[in-house]
Image (cartoon, rainbow, N blue to C red; front, side, top):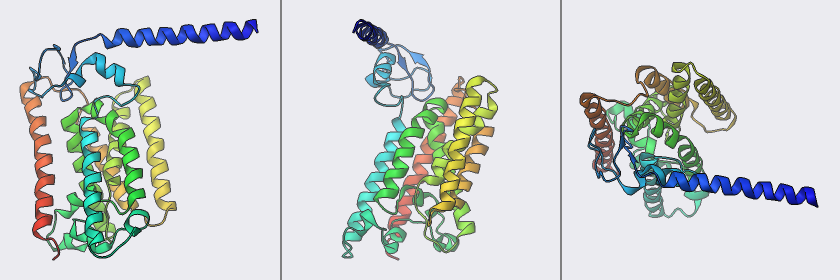
Amino acid sequence: MRWRLARFRRSVAEWLDRAGSLARAGTVRQKVCPACRALVDARDSRCPFCDERLSALDRVGIKRLLGGLLPEGPRYTLALLFVNFVLFGLALLSASRSGVGLEPIFGHMPARTLVDLGGRDYHVWDGQWWRLVTAVFLHANLIHLLFNSLVLFDLGPSVEEMYGTSRFLVLYVLAGVAGSLASSLVHPFSITVGCSGALFGLIGVMIAYGYRHRTGLGEQVRSMYLRWAVYGLFLGFVIPGVDNAAHVGGLLGGLIFGALVSDTPSFTRRGIFGWRLAGHLAVALVTVCFLLVGLHYGR
């Protein structure tokens, strides 16, 4: 009993110490810019270096307090998850008009619905290049969406925090397009949707980070994400219907991006402006591609 009481006291003391440390961390009032990761004054509403809009959630103390519940800085990760779920809802509404019941949720979305909303198929070779982009944001069923969303929610914040929001978004779109292009070359007549190519791009850039940084942390990152890549590709060969060509294309895209682009934040106005412009162009590209889908809807 004395031993159990002593162990209980030690556990309570350790918990109080952790709570105190967390409370002290929460009092830090400075903010961290999510774009260039500069440390700025808590009263700033915009970053003085890159002009990124700042909110109360960017305060260092609040980010540390929420660190145990939500990953740090997942601004664009959450936005991408939101877009994926909204488009899946639109796909369900479109499929319901054709008299389909619960099959798109537990089975497979009708092929016609996926093609109408921008799924990648042979139309890419007829000049509808925008399908290489729009297919990244569509999913075949609820299980497909939830699985990719879990991976994105787990992996996305780490890449976004390490490379910054603008580079993260550019990488996501480029890797997704690389996956769609590889799928078009290997399976030109198949209908392909999903963000798994973009997810493998995030894995690829983390592997490249590990090789770039010859430190203990770099070795841990490289080893962990190499296992992610091997397991993912293995499941792609085992599970029927999985497009491993898109996985390989996205992985190669991420590796090339990581080899060419440093994770070090830009400190010059030219570099900051360049990546902000690239991020805006990525958003504009996705928007234009879906507008083109709307113009060709039902054809």
